[in-house]
Amino acid sequence: MAKINGCDLPDDLYYLIEKHVWAKPMGENVIRIGMTAVATKLAGGSFTAVTVSDRKVGKTVPQGKSTATVESSKFVGPVPAPVTGELLRGNDKLASDPNIVVSDPYGEGWIAEIKAEDWDGEKGSLATGSEGLDAYKAKLEEDGVSCE
Amino acid sequence: MDEDKVLIIMTSGPETPRRCATPFFFATLAAAMDYEVTMFFTIDGTQLLKKGAAEKVFPKEGGEPVSKFLNDALEAGVEFTACTASMELHDLKAEDMLDGIKMVGGAYMWSVADDCKTVLTF
Image (cartoon, rainbow over all chains, first blue to last red; front, side):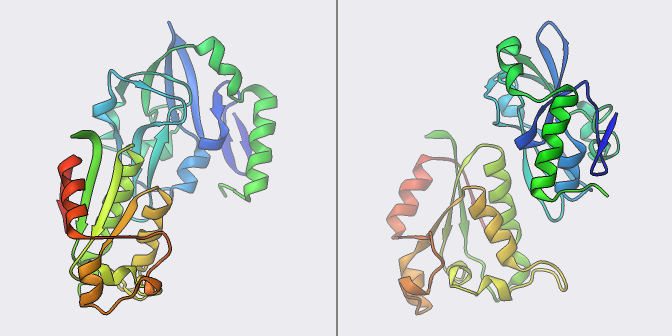
């Protein structure tokens, strides 16, 4: 796990940096997705609700489009899909404790799983490994974002 | 009817600050869910669209002004429409209003409502 500007960012995940979301291949084109530590910081660090969009389950969500929403007393916003695919399911644990997304963004606090349409083709558009984290660091520097 | 369109009718204004944040919050939320959102401001709601007005309305003492919630909704892509008859009621001219507001008659509201999956009124 790398720490960049105080933000935990594992180097084995795939990031859609502009949207601050991660993707993790689970096998057979199933991709688990979630918010990065940066996203939870930008969204205020404490949530009242994280809700996966029921009306989109079973439907194709294009890369960058909303799969879920996060709400706090001061913020509301989408959780965009890092890659295009069918939204399979949301994380059931989010309903009872939305703040697992903040405390464990890459583990218990995952958001949803999607069946990627073309993971091999689309993963090139995501940042990963040490090069990917360098790109993420550049973005954080540019935007003046820190998790500390 | 379009499954992805929703309408929020806003009648609350500066005299009832506590009723003025949530409608914008719900509009922003719907936009984040990829709904196409229109807000129609009428009765006292129109007063919130006067330049500088929403900055002075605080739903919670010491909290954020309504302008914060209003701007979040605009940035999320919510369309704001103002009822021209209620502008007249409050002596508001087109130049008094925030940029990007579409001024429409009541019939426009009916045509949007007819096309929307859900209509909320505040």
